[in-house]
Length: 315
Image (cartoon, rainbow, N blue to C red; front, side, top):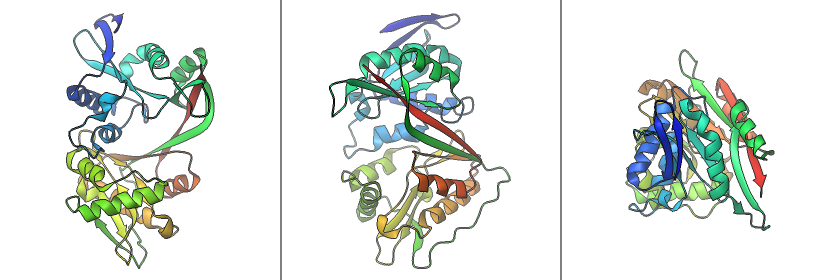
């Protein structure tokens, strides 16, 4: 455990994540900082929900298997945490009033999260920094990190008076919500995710558990395009942050056999209309450096785009 003294807060300490109570505190921090932090500074709460609930074992908290570290004030208030998502990465989530702790958080990540890559004995650590984030870029540069070519983009739309198009779904397909208590529906979602993202590990039970347990899930915002043979051709999930009235597009995908028919676009258009009817203030969608996906999001009228890069250090 490390200790830092901050006037007014007493001693700020850091410690490992211990239990599910810590998960709920981490989640609350993400929700609390939405109105006061720059877009993309912290995870959306759906991303943390996925780490906790997207699991075929309902009782297991896989977050506890990760070396996650929490920073707390002397009064017990959580103000930041670091956790890995992959093998050799670190994700910093911080209350914007406490960004002076980021250097300490990066130092902890260097000590505990660096890992060898599969083709080398060298130890690597990756930390993401947005282009707007001069502070984090400076801290990473001072510690010997270098910006890589890998980038991502988060897009944001505030609804306001933004015009929204009606969806135009291909004539051979139908649009409906998923039925999360129907195991066949859940399996078809798993099959679609595996096909769309080139994976093999998705299964019906993990998807069903997430839908039934994650507070951010909304069934009326979980949309599929159904092919004439009954297969799921495209899928758009839209978790919802009630406290901030924010929708989050995740995931957005189309089966390779049904691409270039505008299916994902139609589902997103329908989702935007449903979000506005729900009273949402804004919506985000996050992606990597995939050109087709970024063209799609541009075409939907997202008003802002923020790019960031993975920074790497080799030890």
